[in-house]
Picture 1 (cartoon, rainbow, N blue to C red):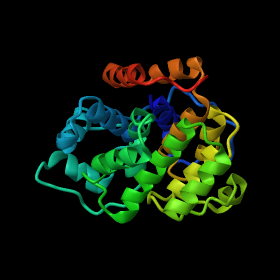
Picture 2 (picture 1 turned 90 degrees about the horizontal axis):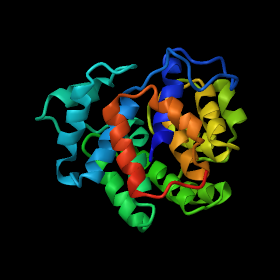
Picture 3 (picture 1 turned 180 degrees about the vertical axis):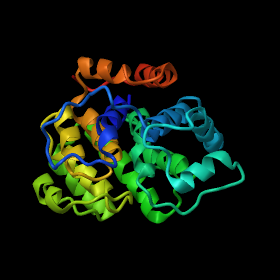
Picture 4 (picture 1 turned 45 degrees about the horizontal axis):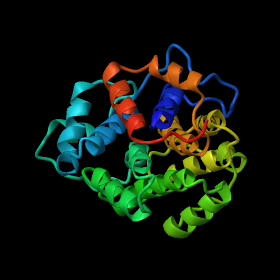
Length: 266
């Protein structure tokens, strides 16, 4: 699975540096949209876990990113250096790149204890994002998806994530939207993306919420989309439109994910 993250990424891709004017009236797919580093890294995490390459997670991540050196939106500065220098280790990042790529962890561990899911989250996160806030953002995203896959209600998910990660999820999308600005930190974007999913009424609504905040639109769309997929599933026609924006190797690794686990009810 994790088409939710990828579709959220694609839908927000053109608004990352050109925010939509605080509106949810937009089409999820337009010709100028495309996949970004969020989708590439999500595919890499899926490949790491599906192939049981946890011990070589950094190598697999680099291989995927080197294959796509110029994605729409480009790579972050430190991450871009890390990709091409195999001598570099983690660099104390607390950026939201840790959270946008982690959704395959939750889906593949949907039938395992949460402790196993969080352990796998740490493995694929700490290769780059070893700052406590970077680890926390990935864990919180993993945990929210995992809870949704257990059919927990939004209110229950909210309580757990607030308790375990000290995120303020009491705000509404309408509270956040007017003054929200671009923020690539986990602490300044992950709680907002989680709120966008928990407040939604459908998969599409979660992405509309996330992109409409006017922040790091593709990444917040990826985080909210992954949680929303676990909550609602994704209509088949939306998956098909998402695939039309993807290269074959990303589709193939996503399809391998879908064969390993039972999708949520549509």
